[in-house]
Image (cartoon, rainbow, N blue to C red):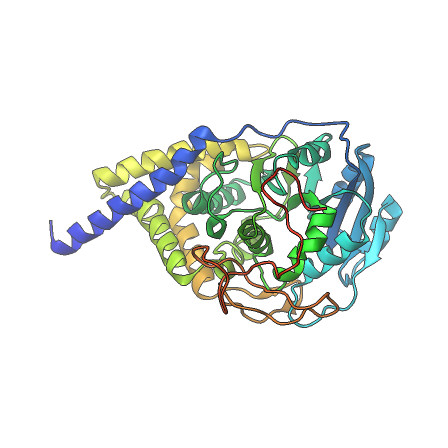
Length: 412
């Protein structure tokens, strides 16, 4: 064995240990959310929407039909199509978002105004492409007895084999980097996963923390929000809701590549060192074994890693409404997923729905006063580590800002 091969093998073995430790968390995952049909809390559903006329109908119809929901608020973020008209016709309360100020990403701006307008004790936010099942909203409200912020993993609608295979390969990169959904022991704030397609929290606590303003510049807004609030002491849960929520994100494999690929790297909420380490794990434990297999030269370590990857593919079948052969074939697309992840890491996409946003450095310091907001806040995700706040350091709640404590109740 040449020295170069020996070094590569040693690095691959170290990456394999890291990946195995993350995947092993799946053995102690929390059980999936069970439906709750009669919650005690008053629930408001807030849906931010920009040009979603073609997708928002099933989401709103399901939310409006659920007796656990007191109101559905659609925040129309400058749509050029019939989103607002359709939402109003279905019975939702439509709130036009004010003009987007500098320094904000549109979704966070819309969510902030929607939460302010909501009247429920509990707010559930949904993306327009979600399909909530009866009992989801009650289950989320009940979960807030144990958490201050809940985000969930859904079941995905991917009908074509190519779309499903690429989607599952992308999804596997998240599991290799952050572990599976429903961890029993929450990770540290700087490694907290989240899914902004569906979130739940107590309205007064979120308003007091002004969470969406503090994540206002980030394309990976959900992870930025979760990590910032977790650093404040919020109990953040990333739970399995696959039996209660479906998401139809993309129409084709090209859509998966283009749209999910833009945020897959979590580039603006992860330090460069951590991004490099995550890329190494994905390349060495998933992409390299597949490439060697296709070339007919896998090592024994490669074959072991491929066996683990096939086991993960089997587990991921439960993440799809109609799992087909694409999920089991997804390991063959791991090199493609690694290429997309690498490209998104080095050239993050900052354009979405006709808007282009300035770049954000992970771990950036204070962003200055919030336009039309209640004073200065610290924006930016939590950088690596959780040392006490210092100039240019981790984002913290300013003095006097209410925050949930560890006693089991959110701030009121």
